[in-house]
Length: 181
Image (cartoon, rainbow, N blue to C red; front, side):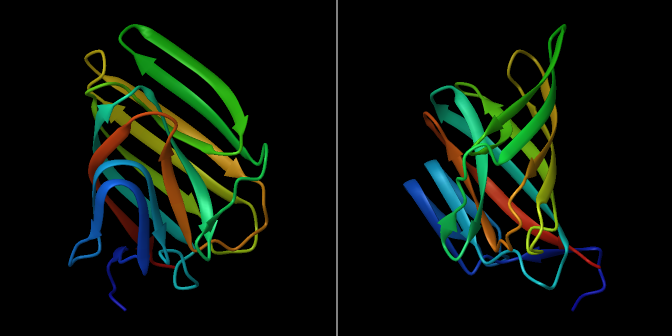
């Protein structure tokens, strides 16, 4: 095992709904015009915490980019199990608020927007509730930033996650890094 702080991980497999998705030679995943993208086998006993880095372009539609935790190829969509608290700054407006749903909230996604996020995931492979923290930025309305924290209250060991859109599709690249213990 490398002695570096972050280790780029390769998914064991991916699933997608959309035009295409593929795992590159280094382990990152590129995707084109997808509404759903699942990465399997990225969380394991080798690491407790992870950092997910993504850049994307919103191709169509206006909706949020959400996540669900995943194990053995199945998403956890338990009602009201994902709780997100967010702070948004857009132009001269600053807003905040909680969301409780069967998905976790990552970032808004507006028409023709270019955006990116860093998503820290704490203890997803441990059989305990999973906590996350996301910082995202986009070129919507000059500059848009969202800082959010979420919890998934199921005490389940997860090996992957799914990103999904409620409307429209996105293209980009995503990479998952394990943080050395």
